[in-house]
Image (tube, rainbow, N blue to C red; front, side, top):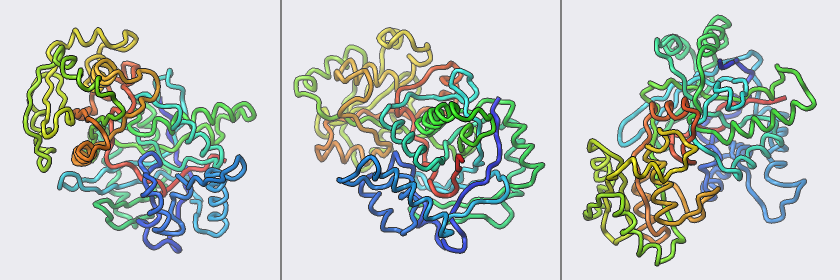
Amino acid sequence: MAEVRPFKGIHYSKSLIKDWSTVICPPHDIISPQQQEELYRNNEYNFVRLEYGRTLPDDTVTDNRYTRSAATLNEWLKKGVLETDKTPTIYLHDHLFTLEGKEYKRRSIIVRVRLEEWDKMIVRPHESTTAQMKSDRTSLIWALQANTSPILAMFEDRQQQIYAQLPRHAQRLPLITSRIVNGEGHSMWAITDTAAVNQISKILADQPLYIADGHHRYESALAYRNDKKASNKSGDAPFNFVMMELVDFSNSGLKILAPHRLVKGISQATLDGLMPKLEEFFEIEKVPLNAAEIRKQVNDFFTETGGVRFALIGQTAGILLKLKLRDLPAVSKIIPGAHSELYKKLDVSILDHLILEKALGMNAEGDKTGLAYSHDLSDVVNRVSNGEYQIAVLLSPVKPETLKAISDAGDKMPPKSTYFYPKSPSGLVFNRLV
């Protein structure tokens, strides 16, 4: 199935960059304007200048964030700030992080994977995408002719054929290390042994890959490949591949958080009519909102057995509404019939179609104006309490096995159904397409 290869990655020069934590950055989709400025100040060589450069008021077709990123890339290559490995390599990455007071390690391998159309079911998506973010990534690929951020994807290593051999590679001197900053740290090793590379590639060739994070990046890479194929038919040309970070479904560091929905721009009349609409489908319990213990309060409710559950804040000040769905078959009939039966039973599908679209009247097509997402419950409470958003709907996280099942069914969840934590950083290593 999947064709996995090593590649000659490009990364910062170890002799010039002493503290890698100052040069790596998050992927573009979670960089706020404030964080973008902080990253610019962190280090003159911070990778944000390539991944997500500033937009300026006087930008033109020939001078913009993408052309400046391309110029910066060429400059850094010439100056030796960036260097290219001479041997095709599979990169072993340990991502250390803390979540809810516990320490974790997500171990993965960074490789090149042949691009395949979705209908071949070799690379399988789990959620829909939006046109705006895809356009941005496509423009960056054309400007840099590179994959700057890895796509996080999952595979099944049932017999631990791959993971059993990774510890010996991690005993060597790391190619890259970064200190722990905000609870996160990184180590990366180069696997260049031909036998090990071939064994990993052979094992992965027998199964599909499931995209966890980076659907827009994959679709942008597909669009780039399809355009380039018009002038170059070579199947081994670099543009036929995309950089991926692969992690086993059973890895203890594979964490999925729920992107809770924050809503604004709803009329008062709609808000006043929300409760009667919810009462048609849900048993509703009103309890005092404990902002200091919101995580425990919500998690305890979601871990109760049985049924589809949501929590809602903002409808009444200081009150948390606990919603328990009464009649799943009746709700399933409201969801568009083109979707699978599994899709119609998902919490996130019911939330988007029943609560956001039917009860709140939000646009069912394309982007929903006034809708934002956050996986941080404290952040959600604060943004509703300070009036930035009117209400928020909280949901429980999607489980890895559910994600796999919806992908295997050839269906997709609504956009922003999952938040894989933490995000894989940009700037450890990247893949050139020329």
